[in-house]
Image (cartoon, rainbow, N blue to C red; front, side):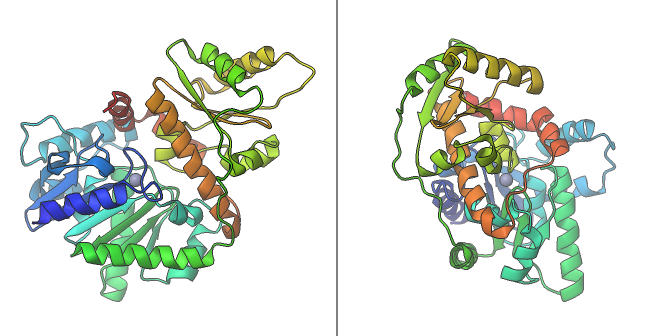
Length: 377
Ligand SMILES: [Zn+2]
């Protein structure tokens, strides 16, 4: 059964943090008339048949012919309504994935979209596009950094159609700068073969693996710092500390922290925030004052509290409104650390641009997803 296979392949990639973390990624199956696509706010790793939304492809196709307002916020809001109306079963409240339009475009039975750390190693690097060409040739497509949702679907459709017109072939793989990858095939074996091929090429290319050895949850004054951070974040906040080989490297100095100092993709932003706070520690000043002052300065400058705090010569603190959210902040930061290490061979990291970061911070759809995830499961 196609739905069973769709559930299987979704869990296969969804339960592997090298491909997907928490609510990231989405999958679909389609025939002529219907598209089954992951519901927004559902985790791929634990998804069941009920986690998919059935879409009417005829109604989805109509969205392409409609004129939307130029203002992105208004357009996305209108689009959400049109997507909800394009569901085959409008009874349920479930919202289809924000990438449903792109799933609908790709002419393959199965489409699996993930955020592999290895792929993002070059997709979030300075030489990303050149690396994609060099490693994979012209058969695999590339889209520059684009806001998720309608804009991304439009851009991907354009490169896909151009490729088809030029070569007469449908592209099975699209790399998305500062985001991840879309892979399409008519069988799940085909999907797995494509992923395996891509990962094998990248495994051969990388020269250094991230070092998460020597992991510890307590170090020096980390417990006191965690208490101070909890006081800053509010009494219901949870703070989790981690120190490991890679975190030691990144927290030596503000300069060493640069490769993980901003957001690589929308997903990284949602779970670990766009602006981690780095606190330099001066032994001559009381620790409590240094933490409180750094927190206040950050709040004044950014306007939202940090989900990741890096403390010099200690390690990384994940902060959340629950234990789970604090752990998720750390999990996505850990993924950023992997990407930063892989990006070393592709000319160094490339973060999302500030306008893209601001767009996501304001984006109603992503806020919705963050809320759903915050609700716990
Ligand atoms: Zn994605």
